[in-house]
Length: 434
Image 1: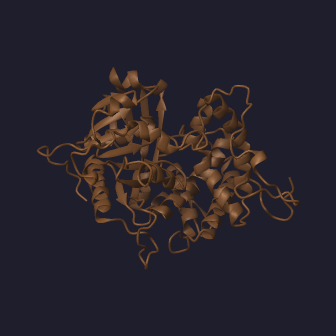
Image 2 (image 1 turned 135 degrees about the vertical axis):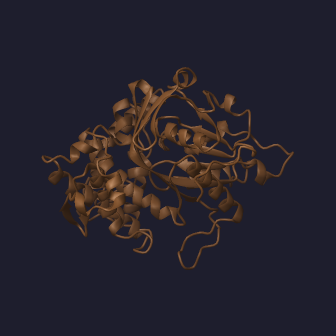
Image 3 (image 1 turned 90 degrees about the horizontal axis):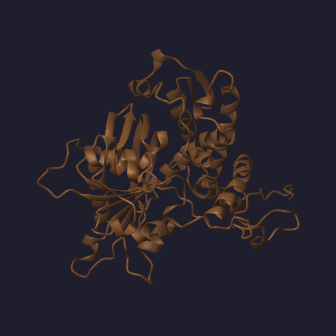
């Protein structure tokens, strides 16, 4: 795919970025470099973007002082002055607080009758963590029989990137890793490829996907089109649940899990947590062809390589050996920022709601329905749930905690053995008593 910028004689693509935190800022920077007009929706850092701009410090892209997008807006009304080609969603997926479609809807300009529907509706790009995030957006903004569609299609994307906001949102730190894997989330009734078992997008959906990937790569980003994005999401959630889960419970940067004094405690817990996720994926039909078991070691190794501490092969740890590394491994080696924290930990420390449902809750719900035991995922979910309930209640103005956050105990139907109903975070085994 070409790395040259689109011709300046063509009209620039209009991109709306909802959520201009660390990740949204890097992606807005890349798309601006690619030639797009990026409208950045900013809340807490709106004044910074409109005045001095952001200082971007990136191992991959270099240092850029005072970077600004094409424009920054603060409200949906300001954003609805034009029709966008793409709506980039880099805000957190927290459906237990607010559905993703409810966040997006106010920013979308309803279509007029002057042009064909297919031409005037944007494509929504979901760059969010977790699994099971797309269906609600598609059913609400595209396929709702009681409302006109506000979007044409959905691109689901998985971000491999380490970046954090610093200095009160004035500075963005970014390491050397930046890869965006993307694919179409098609209509539920789309035909299925008999060989891959993956739903086939329409030609127009494919065109829009390729156009966005070309824009992204033109800005020196690393966009990769994936035919089976569902399996890619599960590969990423291996990392989110394993490294991200332990780092959050420890309240420590990922690098602190990989020291000479901690790594022998961390690796086994991280790997077994990832194996629980893999077993749940198997229970919903993601077989070895779509989600190889080696994905677990891959998710471990991408972090071990960045920290230059070794690799896992077939479950066996191999110490770090600079001489035997490939060129790609040497590029990653040493790129882990010692202060890097997963976004879920940053949110916890900042008093914000967590992506608890897409990273942990949805997987545990599938595990309960399919009778898969997930004790480590259960522990992480149960440990973080009290915080999540408290912060959601405060966000809703329920400072006394009088209104429960669903699913609540009263909506469940415990059996005589103490196993909870589908989706509850307790194993359904015969010895699992409340």
